[in-house]
Amino acid sequence: MSSDTITARRPGALLQRRRAEAAGWLFVSPAVLLFLVFVAGPFVFAIALAFLEWDLLTPPEFVGLANFEQLFTDPELPQVLWNTFVFAFASIVTHLVLGLLLALAVNNLISRSIGYFARVAIFFPFLISWAAVSLLWKYVLDPTFGYVGQYAAMLGIELPNFLADPAWALPSIIVIDLWHTVGFTFIIMLAGLQTVPSELVEAARTDGATGRQIFWNVTLPLMSPTLFFATIITFIGAFQIFDPIQIITKGGPQGSTTTIIMYLYEKGFQAFDMGYAAAVALLVFVIIMGVTLLQFIGRRRWVHES
Image (cartoon, rainbow, N blue to C red; front, side):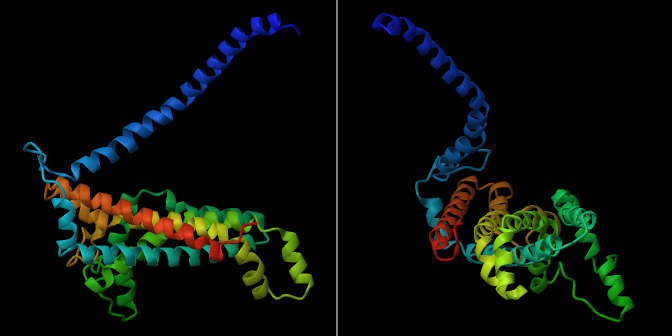
């Protein structure tokens, strides 16, 4: 092929490549626009707002690092962070353990129809809105009208007021969250179980391994990437818990259920201290990023890549 022919074809090829690039940008532009408007834009605005004092009514005033300095002197923040970490740690443990147990039970069901029903039944609560779930459980745990209190009274058992007792309020929220969201963890675990090669399980069984030995030495190591993913997702979701606390306890009693997002809401939209609320929001971002980074660093010790 002569050089004149190649030169003649270059403009058409260049035009076609530019059209392909333009089409690609056109397809991704909605996602890029949504990211800029709802993620990048608010994040930059929050950083700028953290250096201001603003009550939404008067013009904002630049205060420098005063809002960040307040984070270290705020007497309420340690208890709020403690509540949040306790809730997040309890959520990780309960979700991973119960989600894995449910996945193992459903995965070992012989009947396909029963297995399908079990999947739907376990996952269904996750599809209900937090508002409906919160109102439901607020009624169920009501000491006067709730089913739990009525059945306990019939059995002669005196129960505490779960949502009004500082010692029981946070554990009650943990149980409610577990009931509502464990179906999502269950689906993740079930998908992870189905990726375990059956040949390895059969080989271990042929070598005389018991069911417990197969679980600890074959199934669990091969599911470690799934467990790692579920741990990260559960922590991020639990650390940002807000809806049930706002609807059921509003952070009480005595601040025993006030988490960091609830505290952020109180400072920003009740006290109208938007600058300090933005600083708290950045603290949440730093904590989540830090914990996630530590999990990625520690994954080398216990996550077995296939």
